[in-house]
Amino acid sequence: MNNLVVSNIRQRPLRTLMSVLGVALGVTLVMLFTGLAHGMSNDLQRRSSNMRAEIIFTRPGSQQLTASLMNLSTQYTSRLEAIEGVERATPVAIQANQTGRGFGFENVEGVEWESFAAINETKIVRGRAPAEIDEIVIDETKARNSKTDVGGTLRLFGNKPYRVTGVYAPESGARIKMPLAAMQDALEAPDKCSYILVKCHNAAEQETVAERINSELPGNKMQLTRDVVVNFEKSIPYLGTFLRVLVGLAAVVSALVVMLAMYTTITERTREIGILKALGASRGFIISTIEKEAVTISSIGLLLGFVIAFVSGFLINRIYGLVFEYEWEWALVAAAIGLLGGVLGALYPATRAANLDAVNALSYE
Amino acid sequence: MKTILQAENLEKSYRVGRVDVHALRGVSLDVHEGEFVAIMGPSGCGKSTMLHLLGGLLTPTSGRIIIDEEDLTAASDAARTDIRRRKIGFVFQRFNLFPTLTAEGNLRLAERIQSDGKGDDPERRHEVLRLLRLEDKMHHKPLELSGGEQQRVALARAVVTRPAIILADEPTGNLDSENSAIVLNMFQELNYRFNQTIIMITHNPEAAAMCRRIVQMRDGQIVERTAAVHIS
Image (cartoon, each protein chain N blue to C red):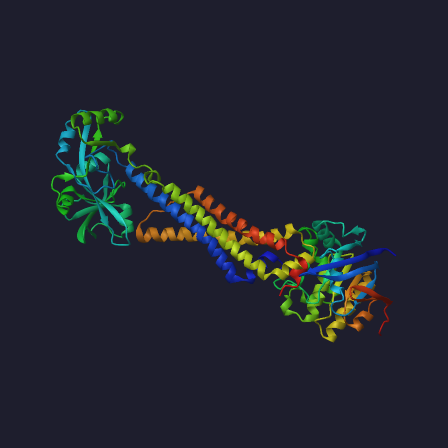
C-alpha cells in the first residue's frame, strides 16, 4: 500500500462509508426527485399527445384530465356534432380513484368506447372493448404495473370489482377506461360527463370551429388539446423552484458530510501532517493530498448515488408504477454537486491542516 | 572542508503567559560536510529547539542559519519548506512513520514530496533499504516491524532523498540497547561510507561517543565542544 490517499481511505472504513453514503444521499435525492418530476411530466405529456381530438368542451369551473366533476350534460354531444366543421364528438367522464397501494390516486375514465376509439385511433390489442357496467379496459403500462391482464379484476371506487376485458394502445388519458354508463352508474350521475372531446373535419380550422361552438353554445368553456398540460413542471407552480431548492440542499448535505469527515480526519492525523511538514511537504501538497481523498470519496459516493437512484427508481416503478425518467442535464448537476460538495467541503479542513504549526503537530498526542 | 551548516548567534524566546522564556541564548555552530555531530545536554537546555530551528520548523527570534549556502532565516515560510524538502532529512525519537504505508511506501512518499509529486526511483529505494538491511521488510507496515526496524525505516526515509544534512532527535531514545547499537551503527556507516552529514541529539553518552564531535548545551547555550572519544 504505497498510496497515502488510498491507504488513508482504507484505514477508516466506517468513516469512509459514512462519507460516501452522505454524498450518495445527495446525488440520489437529486436524481430521484428530478427523475420523478420529469418522468411523470413526460408520461402525462405522452398520454395527452395521443389524444387526437382537437377541442375539449367543458362547463366553466371544470378542469380537464385531472378533474372529477361530472357537471356536463351528455346531450351536448349531439348538439356539438351538428355544428359545422365538427366531425365527431364523444363524452368522457373522469374520476380520481384511490389506488390500493400507498397514498396515490389514479384517474379512471368513462367513455363510449367506439366513438372514443374512433376519434383517438385507439385499438384493443388484447381482448375486447368494455360493454357491461362492471367491465374495464386498461393500457399496457397499467397491465404491466398491476400484473393484471384480460380476465383479471381491478377494484375501483370503494373496492368494487371490475373485470378487465381488454388491453388498449396507444396509451391516452387515464390508464383505466370503463363504459360511460358504468361510470355514471358508479357515481350516480346519469346523463352526465366531465367533458366532451371534439374532432374537427379539418384540424387546421380548430380555432374557427372553437369560435363557432362558442357562439352557438355560449356559457361553456373550450380548450384546445394542444394547450392542455404539456409540461407538468410548468403546470405545478414553483415545482422548478422546489427542485432547485432540493438540489441546493443536496449540495449542502454533501459538502457538510465531507467537511465533517475531513475535519475529523485532520484532527486524527495532526501528527501525520506534522510529519509531512517535517518532510518538506508544501501547503499545496498537503491541501492536494486531502482534496484528492475528498474527491475519491465523492467519486465513489457519486457512483453509488447513481446506482441507488437507478435501482430505487426501477423498484418504485415496479411496485408503485411511478415513472422515472433521468436526464443527462440533471445527472451532470448531480455529479457536479457530489464532486464540488466534496471539494469545497474538504477545502477548509485542508487549509487548516496546511496552516498547522509543524512542531505543535509533531508533538500532538 | 565545506561548511554545510552555519548557525550564528541564534536566539529563541517564547512568550508563556506574561513571561518570556529564553530557550536559546546566542548559540553559534558550524558543521562541515561529512561531520557527525552529537548535541548533548540536560532536558530543557534547548537541544530540540535548536534542532527545530536548524531544520526550519521554527524561526529564530534573532540570528542566522545558512544551510548549504542558503539562508534559512531570510527565507519565507514557503521557501523554508522548500529548503527543508531539498536539503534536510529528519529522524525522530518516535519514528514518525505513516502507519498506513509500507516501509517502501514511506520512502516513496518522501521521494514524492522531495520531487513535488514526480519522483519515483524504485532502484534508489531498494538500494537504501538494502543498505539498512531492510530489503525483506519493504512490504511491511510499521506495526509489523520492531522498534529498531521502524527506526531504520525512518532513517532510510531521511536518506533516500539524498539530503545535505540529517537531523536526528534522540533516534535511540525509544529503543533497547541492542536495537540502539544497530541503529547507531547504521548512522555511523552512512557517515563513513557516504560522507553523510549528521547532527544528532542524544542523552546517551555511548551514542555520542560514536560521533566525531560532541557539543554540550546548558541553559540555552553551548558550553563545551569536544572531539568524541571512540569506544571500541
